[in-house]
Length: 462
Image (cartoon, rainbow, N blue to C red; front, side):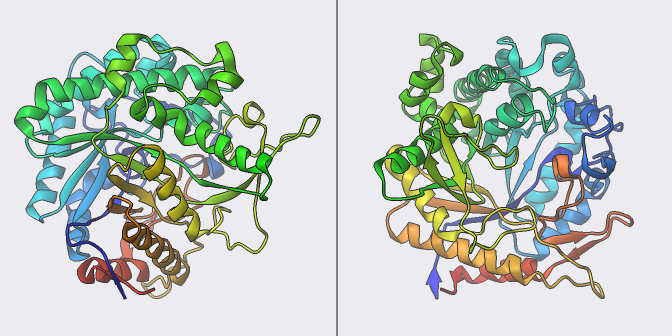
């Protein structure tokens, strides 16, 4: 048995559009996901988040369930259009009240609240009126929205995350178009990423200048990255793996920790990669009090020789593959989740060490990790042994990384309950708690009980 540090943060995570429902209630404005899900053919089985888990009406029940399972922390996201229906301008008092009541309910149960300001659900008005994340003006608009949240909730919320996975917004939203707003382009991902980083920096500056001194909280960003292992010991494949990681995580983390985009991106993209002004660099560099990481899987990376074809898969998390000259390869012996993602626990530890080394030992919080399984509800129970094994193996690697000197301070399982899995609708279940979407009933899975015991004991069986 291996112990975790006493002050380690244990939690679960969700996102507003995936669980709340109530898409036309409480004064909420429309988001790009409200619009995207109603376009025929965009979402598997024609699913939408109109009702989803109905967390908007059932949040008290959900908080009681969290408390019963011993959660110490809960990472939620705020729906921007529930606070500012048009994305800017008039504040919706009903939206403020909903999140305030939710935060109070969590605090009453001794659960620490972690709030993500943006988990992909941009107000539709901003997409239509100013072209969304492509417009440089959105950085200040986002900072203004963030200030509304700091003002309303910062007396009780001490852990803020500006953006969740800006890589996904850039690549899936504006590169291959499989997610809202459904744009397809070879240049927009880099333009959008640039504005996302500027927005993050400006929001952090507002918090640090106007709110952090009095509220005594902290703020960061969450980036996602899968591990890239060299396919062979060749120098070409080693360089390909490093290049893939820099195009994935370095793209967003380097400007924050090192002051600019990775040099390999500048060399390969040239004028397609925007340039930060000196003012932008000053605001962005050092703008994260912790390193938020969402990690799920691993792939081998192989160098693409001149004349070879770059293999692309929209869900392979390769990004703009032909800009990198990297082929991503699975080991046929690896187990896969129902998403088709490889289960490779040692990749998680290697990912943590890569961050630890490149960014000078930052405090790391794993803000998402988990797996989708083919869960079946039988007599009110779900025996999700594969998920338990996934969590156990990944957390074993996390514990080992801590022993090896990585400053990993927290872990949030994805997800607290089954929910709307974006373009895949309700076909995938990531939750520790099963949701019967017809009745709305929640059923704790075996994994919820296992995780609850882990939190209580603070130990993992190796």
